[in-house]
Image: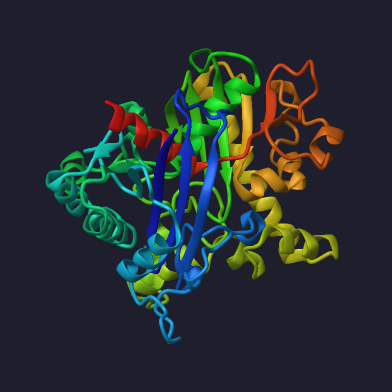
Length: 408
């Protein structure tokens, strides 16, 4: 049994899980969470924070406050204090390694990396591509290195899974020299989630992952689609940043880039305000005033027109990506919903795939509405394309990738 601490440091947050991972670890192996906790000064500022629909009860270790930077006596004021407080409350005996979520690995990192000074410098060089995320990720690594000298530290990158995208799938049609100079490229995100969910889907179907083509739909407050061919990402909806693609809780997803110029020239909005608009005041919250899918569905059920429109826009965008990725893959074996909305909103699953019967995509109403949890198939038994619900576990994926690096 190996003990791995997984850290996810946001700009104003710290989330951790401590795992015992058995030898020969796999997604369905015995073992599990020894401790977990969170400290957060402002959840609304973390653009990867889950919508309420995907929040699970979190056992916060005694002594670790739930906010970084608050004024209560003894409250952690920064990542160093929060992490030190967490580690004082959990048993790190026999700790094998620490795995860190790092949002952006750019074109540099195609796999998790054992942290040394060169890796730290490379992550720092990528800060312009992820100014809200990589600095916090770096802070967590630096603090952990100082508090746990001698314990291997591993960086696991959200973008790494998508480094298998072909040039045609990852290149934007802008001036090539400009794109090269400024790193404009489709990087994709949620890679740890798409990786583990695609493997779990293949296992659910009883087939080797190398033989299965899957479209994975990670639907939380942040949302993305991924076309996975034999375990490899060949298409993903997020791009240079997590703003592109599906409609999300507070983000617009795809839109005409001329909208930005129009708002700047005609409305006189500064670029910082447009950035705030598209990342914080768009998506479901922009259309209907809420980013919690449960609240949106409740409002829709009462006849709220804004909620009904937001729901249709949200599901239509998903359906469009499913069709596009089906065409890219050529053969589709499964569509899998995951994350808070994907795992818990039957209405979204049904509406997002409605009308795709001729493509062999059918949702069985009884299976879809059944109050089950865990990995399951919600399409009819004889459907050409399996529609699945598979819970994601990004922290477990980080833990197992971390052990893989340490073992190597």
